[in-house]
Amino acid sequence: MIWILLNMMLSSWISMKRWNNFPRIEDISHIDNVWFILHIALFLSHLEEKEWNIVDKEFIIKRILFNSTKILFLSDISSWTRVYIEKINKDIFPELEEKVFNHILSFNAPKYIKEDIKTIMNDETKTLELSIIKAAKRYAAYKECLINMKVFELTYEVPHNEIMTSLEEKRKELKSLDRLLKDSNYEKYLLNIRKLSHSFRWNSEKRIFPISVMSHLVITAFLSYIIWSIENAKWWKLNIYEMMLKAIYHDIPEAMTWDVITPTKKAIPWFSEVLEEVEKQMLKDYLFYYVWDEYENFVKDYMLNPWSWTEWKYVKFADVICAMFESKIEVNYWSTNYIEIYRSLKRKVNTFEWPSVEYMLKEVSDSFDDKNINLHFNNW
Image 1 (cartoon, rainbow, N blue to C red):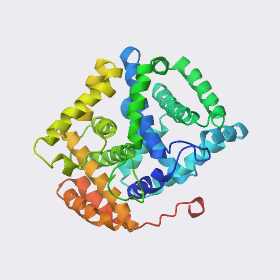
Image 2 (image 1 turned 90 degrees about the vertical axis):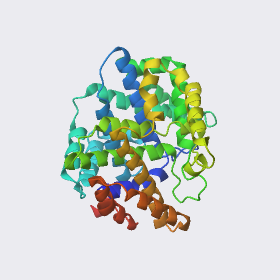
Image 3 (image 1 turned 30 degrees about the vertical axis):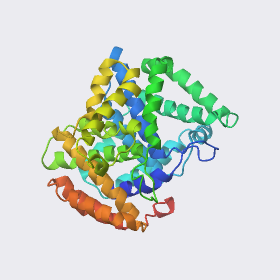
Image 4 (image 1 turned 120 degrees about the vertical axis):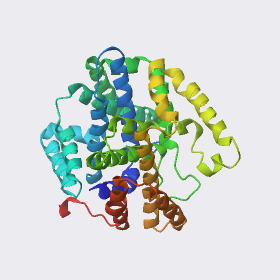
């Protein structure tokens, strides 16, 4: 299951574009949309906790990650098409999604991972958290629609009106969404964060599957979850909430500075240290200026601190192995300039001595040699 999902995330997921039957001025991949939803949901959770309710943020992260995998096995059914489907038969789409999800769980994977996924996906008792997730999805779609309306106003008029109606209804029940929609500073913060969808990794290399920094963070979060599951089952008792927060936030400074590669950082003495100060100042000017002090204090360590805590070292491993898989899938499709990159990263991964490393190398990495994954319904 793990290698199939990762393979599809790094190929199908980043190739699937939002608003695919609309003219558009920006291409947002499905996986970019997942990260923005994650960030909006976490931001709404902090707003909620600031004045009103305690939120289970670990549940929110897991639910968004697990639920998003279903689209890998479905065609890109838009939310508007889904509305019409549900008008004709309200039960049929949930039945389709259940079939897809059961298919995902049928693949080989550790039992404890499957059980945790089923527990999270079957939990409908967390009404506040589910409401936050739904609001985050609507707000992400609203921003995508609003940007494209700048040029294609008439084309986006109907979806824009439908989204606005949905948001107006949702803000009546969710105070944090109401606060977000009222505060233009919060909007500016999220728009600056969103620039990560346009910041691409390996920018000096030719790519068959270009991957944004935003997409990379989603896959790193998923890998962090897998690593946590294996390590907890075998040895360590790690904090998955800490790990996934680090995975989700750690590259956000690149929304301001772009992706300055490690060789450049180390090219001359003290340049790396100067860049660290630049990151702090740019985050203050472009992000933290728009949010309250408590929120800044919460997120800045996840964005800026080195990989010092125990949990964060495992996230660093997830970050490295994600890069290894990014280069591996390029090699699979005959990008010869990635062969040495892949070999170098694999050597680095081999220096980690944890149970999760053995699993990633034996059960996941070698499976990436298989490019032809045929997962359509007629093969189920």
